[in-house]
Image (cartoon, each protein chain N blue to C red):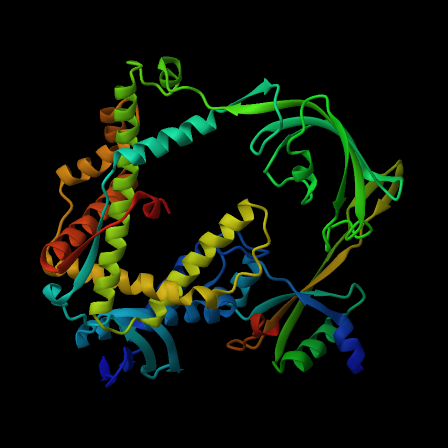
Length: 97
Length: 430
C-alpha cells in the first residue's frame, strides 16, 4: 500500500464522549474511506501512529434518504473503524490537531 | 518567598526581586482547569462532559498565563507589604521565569508614593484677595441690565453713532452693479462695524428719506477677491433712523427681574445680593487657587510617573469625549501638552491628602450643608435642594471633597503669612 493511500484511508478521528470512553481501553474510532478494508486500516494506523493494532472492526452507516423538490436522493454514507491497540498503547489525538 | 529590594538614592523608582514557590501556581492552575471543565463546550461532548485531558490540552497554556499574572501581582504586593513600601504604580514585570517545577522568579520595577514633608505653613505667604461691592458697581450692573433691554424708537434727526438705521442701498463699480452689492430694508446699527470700513461713516448725519451716493473702498484682503482694493459707489437711501432707548428704572422694569416690591431700593438690594454671591464664589475660588499654588511652591517632592500617566489618560478621555460631543475632530489632541497640568494635579492631590491626614481634617455635616446652601440659594426651595443633593452618595462625596479643600484653605490661611489684596470687581469677573 503506497503512502498516498494511507492518507486517503483514514479520514479523521471521531471525537465524542463515547470514543473518549473507549480510548481508556485502547480502542480508537476513526472515519475511514468507504472502500477501505480492515487490512488497509490496520497498516495505515500502524504507519501513522507507530502502534501495534490488535483488531479492526468496521461499521457501515448508510446515508439518509432525502426528498428535495419531489426528487428523492441519498446522502453520503459513512464507514467507521474501531481500532483496538495492543493493551497499554495510546494515540495522542489532541496534539494532532 | 524571598524578596530583595533595591531602593533608589533619588527618585521613586524601586526594583524588587521576588522568588516564590510554584506550588500555589500549580494548584491554582488545576483548580481553574476543573472550573472551566464544567463549562467548556466541545463538539461531540455535552457541556461539562469533556474529559480532563482534552480540557488540559486545549486550555492549559491560557490558564497558566492567567494564573501567572495573578501570582505576579499577588506576590508582588505581598512582597511590597513585607518591605513596607507604599506602591503608587507598577512600571513593569521583567525577567519572569516560570518553568514547570521550579520556583517562580521575577523582577518588578515600581514607584512608591513620595514621602512628603509637611511644609511649615507659617513660612508660606499667600495673597488673599478681597473685594468690596461699591455703589458704582451696582450702578454698572444696573446699566448693563438696562442695555440688555434696550429698545429702538423712530426719531426724526440726523443719524449718529449707536443709532439703528433702516436703509436700501445698491453698489456699483465703474457704473456696473456687482453681486451682493444691493439690498433693501437693511437694519444697521451704526458703529457696529458690520459693513466694510467707510460705509457706516458715510451714513452718519443722514436723515430719514434722504438719499446720497458715497464712495467706499473695499479693504485689501477682502474675502471676495475680485472686490478687494476696488472703490465702489453706493447709492444709499435711508428709510428711517431709530435711536436706542434704555428702559427707565421704574416699577415695571424692576418687576421683570422678579423683585415684587418694585422700588428702586429693593432692586438695588437685590442686584447687590446677586453680585455679592458671584463675587464671593470667585473670591473663594481665587483664594483657593492661591493657597494651592503657595502650598505646591512650598514643598518639593517627586511625583510618581505612573500616577501622572493615569491622570493624563483620564484627562484625555474627558477631553476627547467633550470634543466629540461638539463634533470636533479629537485626533489632534497632543497628550504632551497636558502633561504639566496632569503632574500638577497629581502633586496637588498627594499634597492635599497628606495635609488632610496630618491635620486630621474632616468634612462635618454642618460645613457640607453650608457649602450647599450657597448653591441652593438661587433655587426656590433651598431646603429641598439640599436634601435631594445629599441623598446621593456620589454627589455627597463631591461636596465633602470641597468641604475638606476649604478646610485646608482655612488652615493654611490661619497660619500662613497672609497679604490682603483688594481688587476691583472688574478683575474678578474672569
